[in-house]
Image 1 (cartoon, rainbow, N blue to C red):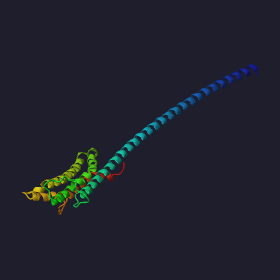
Image 2 (cartoon, rainbow, N blue to C red; image 1 turned 90 degrees about the vertical axis):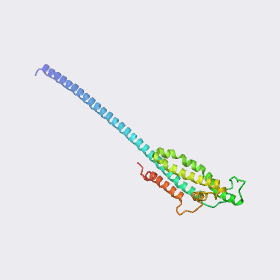
Image 3 (tube, rainbow, N blue to C red; image 1 turned 45 degrees about the horizontal axis):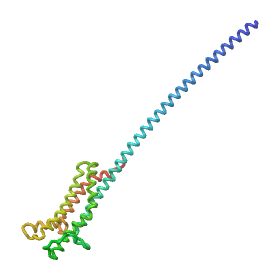
Image 4 (tube, rainbow, N blue to C red; image 1 turned 180 degrees about the vertical axis):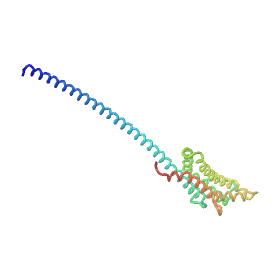
Length: 235
């Protein structure tokens, strides 16, 4: 065998082996880069999806938090309003209760024509006014909630407040009329009118108390507005 041929064959083999190695390294590098690029793309897509999911979850939680806060605020306000009307019923019942305690009624200015009997009678009437004045702060807070109640439940929510305020006004007017007509209480139709006024202020018994009936009807309306909200479950 020719040594030159052997050396030449070895060189060619080495060159081919080196070329194959280079090709292998190039292919390996290219494959690695491709895999890395695909992994990077995959990771980026996963990160984007996670970010989108986190944003969607945060938006959903925010919407739920807002819905819960609105539900809680509306429910608590409905409970407050309904409790207010029940308290008004008790207050008006106490205001209209006949009889006096201590010096009730004595803040009324006395007229020159009054006898001792007149004074006692008129002071007793005036007790209702005094009792109402002592509850003026409560009634101010009570009526202040009217507009918020309308804002939450619609225009029809004004009616119970308006009707209740009319009841309060009718009681005050009845007492004022009893005071103003007392000196001429036996003239014309005044005796019959005074019976109606005394019934309104609660000092003349009636089979069905008109004020109690009106207040109960008002509370029934408030119940229809508030009770569904109070009994509703949280969103």
